Amino acid sequence: MIQQPSTIVRTVVNLLVPFIQLFALYAIVHGHYGAGGGFQGGALLAVSIVLSRISNGAESLERFSSTRATVIAAGGMLLFGLVGIVPMFFGASFLDYEGLPLFWVHGAELRYLGILIIEVGIALAVFGTLVLIYDSLAGDKW
Amino acid sequence: MRLLGFALVSLFLALMVYATGGLPDRGNPEAPGHENVWHYYLEKSMEETATPNVVTAVLADYRSFDTFGETIVIFTAGLACIVILMKRLK
Amino acid sequence: MFWQVDFWLLVTLVITAIIAISVRDLLATVVAISIYSFVVAVLFAQLGAPDVAFIEAVLGAGISGVLLIVALFLTKRRSED
Image 1 (cartoon, rainbow over the protein chains, first blue to last red):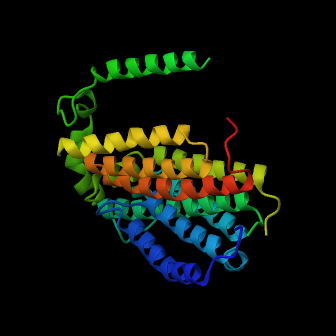
Image 2 (cartoon, one colour):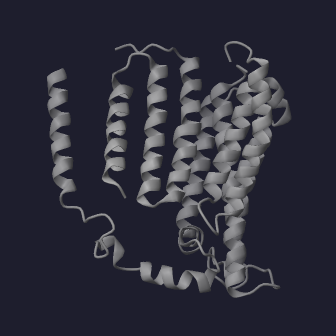
Image 3 (cartoon, rainbow over the protein chains, first blue to last red):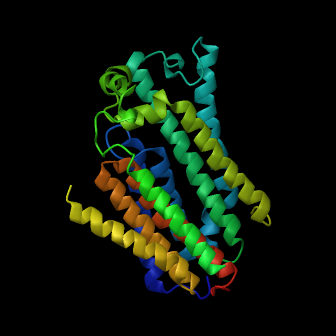
């Protein structure tokens, strides 16, 4: 930010970012069986992007722009809302996953799947929002 | 002024310590928070949602409306940050 | 678990809170707040709430520290009072 980060910092961050993202995916999909879930996974994804922003600067902005972060945040929110509203057209109440139109699964399995979709939606929304907050704070300083 | 602030903080600390004495013990099975609905979640969450982690089952299934509101709050905070701080989207 | 673990974690909590409000250099304040969040995360984990501990460690000790440091570099580093 004040001075250009050294080669060591950039190399280490570029090595670290994919592993953080892999762990974030693990945290999202493993929320059914242990600690983890949408919020944690989304925050970890945002951490990886912010690390890349700090060390790589404008290059990171080219690779993952603020517009894309906005679209991802809104898309996650939309996914959550759709999972809530779609069951209402099939005779169930708001956010009742057993009314989702996935006819090859039933009962508890369907609710399991609904929880998974919800977690992905939360993760996308949190991820996009945190990256957006960082971008709007930092502006075009780096 | 400094003395007044110190006295106020001390008073608040004394109040908090006094109020802590009225809380139930940690892990006490007869605490008010442990009496009503948790039996249902612990017993039924596996067969109703096939999710071993009860925290996730409560957060994303039984209380998913709360989670919906929570996510909307975070998203709105991000939108407010854009409106106030961001010069232009690029 | 062991009361010693609780005791020293809580002592660290109080010390970092006092450092955070009394130090003039605001960068040191941010570091103290990050340490505070991490100790709170360890306390949550020790109380048996790994989900909350996870999110506190990621958000409190990771993202919020970065955001505060960015805000510091955009304004200035020394405290006025």
